[in-house]
Length: 350
Image (cartoon, rainbow, N blue to C red):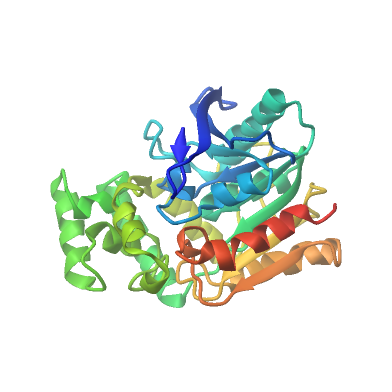
């Protein structure tokens, strides 16, 4: 049981275990309020090298609070990229085929619902959109995608950085970890941490600096400091950890192509995700922070244009002024600026 800012009982949490399609152990966190949900289930999907707790920043009102308050039955997915699960050299392909479809089916089995909505972020969004485009999550009727989906577009300096660094990193370490800026367990980790701390002077939070080095270009890269309260900026220290270099290899290929590509040859997935009509009837709302320095807002503009080309005036695009990559979820004013827009999209008829 958690409490709200006034100390009153607010939300209850239970963990529901499920096996992914290849047997990898994942889980769902089911969050309920003091009153029964009046709307159906909504699934929240985190990004790379974080966990479901990503949606629980120490702000006055989290997205979970907001959704529960609007009557939704809220489920958080810890998929194989979660730092709460066993470390593994995952790919987007594995998550798309094995994790998200099985999470959706588990929610359907637990709730009896035949239609589910989803709010997806970053690499949770790319991998979930791979599932949707391949027709693997037919139960999902509405998707709110934040930051990036089928078209990863990054700043030119990021494209150069990732293209040059990933082949070298692959030879030296299987993972990158922003926590190395706090504790570096190996010589390679120490060298990377020293470089990060030498080149990043935007704040006094070492993990914040490590996150910016790992995931983008900027000081910081994933948010604007002015959008975070002090408690959230401190909370960041425990919310980012290991992410496999193997994932970055796949992202390099996707960035060069201009769209997502599958890399493991799995028959469930198309090799090219934009060569045919998406195999989903879901309505998609594409959200993009105008100040995103990890994936440019152009990423979501292109994905919206692609979906709109197949079904005009059905999907939507939301450009968030003053926001970047992650602060639409963890920003101190996100409950005022962003969360009502998410609910507005969830409630649109399909």
